[in-house]
Image (cartoon, helix red, strand yellow):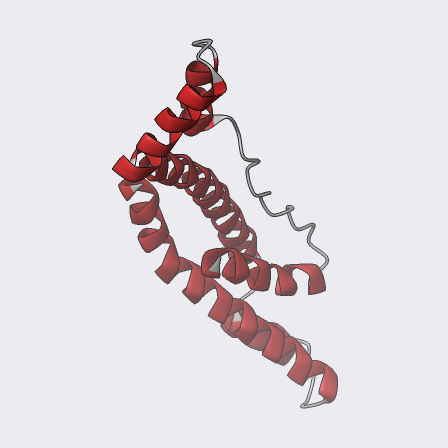
Length: 150
């Protein structure tokens, strides 16, 4: 979630610069997964309902149901993290194309602009963009490693 918020925050200076921001990834829908397949297999056995109920309770007591649910949620988390990682990488590329504080200051000096609200806003935005670039650059290696671990 923090990675998603970081990428969303990085999109703010892009919007201010008039750059089209790619939409963020959507949370993957819950799918049948291993637990769903296990339940479907049990139900397809044609056992009477009371036998099926006992087998389900055994799965719950032995931890199999929990293990299947955990595995399915980890798969959803991996898909979400992979999407967020790609989104963060896109934001970084777009931010790096915009001028940084040094370039902005040089441009303002070349234009002969003195200190005003407009020049302060331009510099403030450039510094904010640099901050977002630094956050993304520092966070992406950890995100890549987390995706590998899942």
